Amino acid sequence: MYALQQHNLREIESLNQRGGRTLSFVDLISAGTMSAEMVAHCWTAIAHGASFLTAARPGGAGKSTVLANLLMLLPRAERIVTWQPGTVGIPGAPRCHLAHEIGAGHWYGYIWGSDVPDFLALRSAGDRVASCLHADTLEELQGILCAPPLQVTPETLNGV
Image (cartoon, rainbow, N blue to C red; front, side):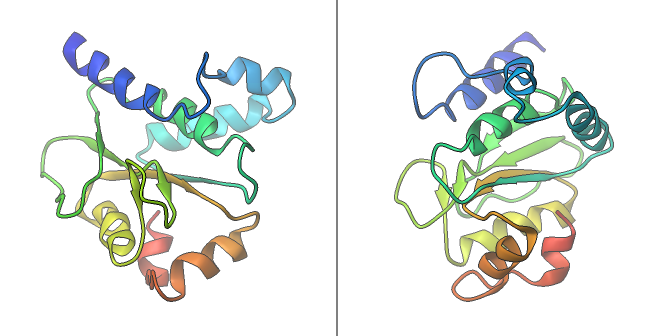
């Protein structure tokens, strides 16, 4: 179990794009970014198997920071795997597939194009998915994900 926890911490720390200490939920609550009720709701949803996307349009808004904190709420036995094209779900092995960002960049952990529907479809295979993207509203998020070139089906998106 210790090796799994160390692996997951490395995966979470790889989200830190700015260096220094990743802000915690305590920091986010103190700054007014999230409320304790929001954190409690997220924790409950994750405990019941929810996948999650964090979103905000501007860079530096805290998408990856919130994503990292949500990943810290995963059950202890769940392995975080940074998703690569061709990755498939493994029945019986609890996994959270992580894409650092749904975006057109060529950086580690970024996904775009036909990889995005494949990534989100892992949810229907019984695995969890987690990522972030640049959108300020649910309508904008759906517009980005369901339109070309991504073409995620509404059914797949609703599964997340």
